Length: 152
Image 1 (cartoon, rainbow, N blue to C red):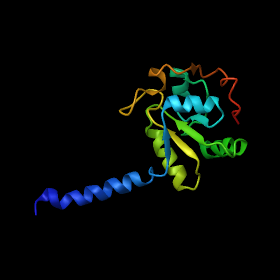
Image 2 (cartoon, rainbow, N blue to C red):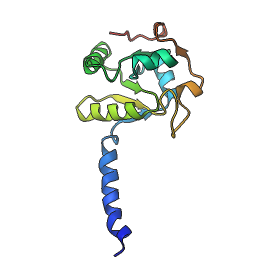
Image 3 (cartoon, helix red, strand yellow):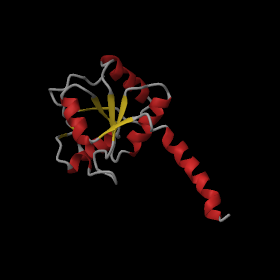
Image 4 (cartoon, helix red, strand yellow):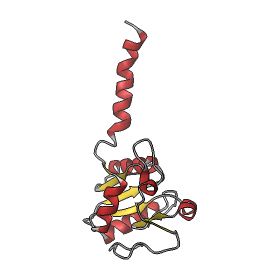
């Protein structure tokens, strides 16, 4: 048996284990996130850092919650409490942090969370929020007035 034949099942197992957490997490594109946030069907949350928000701006329909803040989970739960029946959709720069965060939240029992793939800057799966020409606001400007959810 060749080396490749012996290690292929191992790589298949690693792939299944690595992607298994994401299997239950719903994903959507930035276009879908924008439309659904405006309709009140999701609460979009930008989980990048304040420095990133200041540098690039953020989706005009997004609340903010710094993934690296010690209060990240408490803020997320406060947003969920204000919107108990509305899915929370997380977006980051490229979709990597939001993908990991949604998978971990799902594993921890917080369901109804969505990963906005591509992020704001784009990735290998698509161009992202900015390149799609979706509305952006400065970090010091309030969220789009038509969004029902408020920043806790």
